[in-house]
Image (cartoon, rainbow, N blue to C red; front, side, top):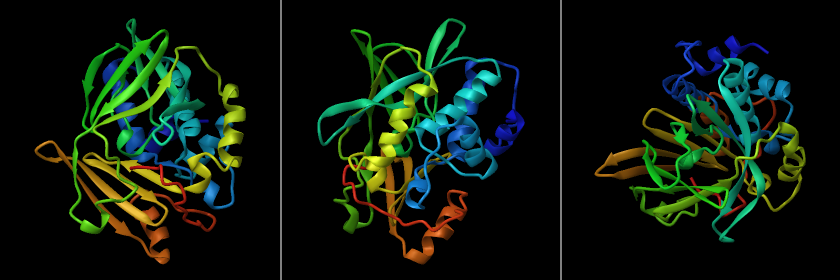
Length: 289
C-alpha cells in the first residue's frame, strides 16, 4: 500500500512531516470531503471487507467510500504511516428509538500530540460528522462548523454529544420527513480508552452485514462532506445540508430521485462509479441525516 496514493485520493498536497494538530486537522478534512461514508456494497450484492488491503483497494484504488470499520482503519493506517501516535478505540452508538447505546460496533481513532489526546473520526457521516479533532477534555464545548460537540467522561466511559442548530426546510412536503433529526441535543456514541485492534471488530463486521437488526442491511446510504455542508443519499432520497445558512440555522433541501438518476448522482456528487447494480433501500426509519 502506498501512502502517496492515499494522499492523491484525498487531494492532500500539504506537509507530510509536521506531526501537529494543524496537519491532523488538514488530513481529516481532506478525507471526509473526498471519501464518502457509505454502505453501498451491501446493496450491490457484495460484502464490506475488514481487511486493510481490501479496504485500501476499495477506497483508494477504486475511488469508493466505506463505513467506519473501513474509513477509520484507513485513516489510522495513514496517520501511523506518517508517524502520528495513534490508537484504535471501540465505540457504542446511541440508538434514539431505544434510548440506549449499542454494543461495541463503532471504530474510532485516538491521536496523541505533545501529550494532548484527541479523538479523530472520519466514519460517522451525515450531519453528525466531526470536522476537526476533538480534544479529550470532559465537559468542554467544542464548536465546529457542523455543530457544537461535547465530550464527557463518567467512570472511565466517554460520551460524545452534539448541540445542533435549527433547520430550515423550504419544501413543505418534507417537513416531517423521518430523515430529519428533530432534537437540538443529540447523543452520538460512547467509548472507552481501551486500545483495540482491527481483529476485535471481526465479529462486529459479520453482525452488521448479516443481522436484520442493524440499519445497514435495511438502508442504503452515502454521505460526503463539502466545505459548506454535507450531501446525503438515503435510498432514493438525496439531501443537501448547508451549515449555518443564516442566523444559526441550517438549510436542508430534498430531492426524490428516479431510478435512472441514482447512478449519475453517485458519479457527479459522490464521485462513485459502481461495478454492480445498486438496489436502493430505505427500510429503517431510525436513520437520520
